[in-house]
Image (cartoon, rainbow, N blue to C red):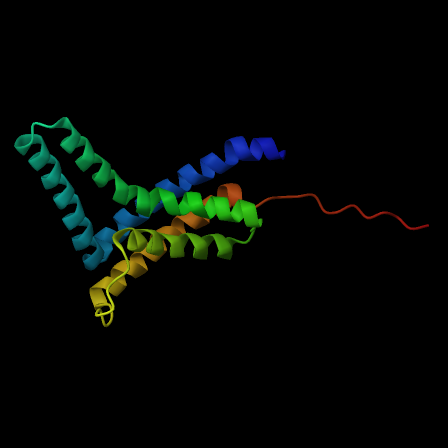
Length: 167
């Protein structure tokens, strides 16, 4: 397969399929893990309330677009950006292993939202059980997207190197 075909078709398809896999995984985990489901529902309700508050309480259309931008930031940080960064790192570093894609996407899915809200203060002693379960679920969401990306665009079937016959 030529590099152009791979870059034009397989990489975007792998990223799109990885984001879809992350979406399915987060919904499935939200159903089966009550802590993630509660956090997921709270985020959706907060975004919904902020949107309608901006619509009814403000006459400024900029306030509404700002709420919409902020509401779209979390799904992008959790579902799309980790797989895009994973794809970029994997292509630049020429990573071809499934484990590398899975671990890198899972780690980025945890780190990107965490970094966007800022590092926790030094006074925070440890994570609660619910926070640990939510972080584990986020890792599995990223791992699912990394695996799907790897299956579509990450692995490469290159021909075996040709051996020159020796006389």
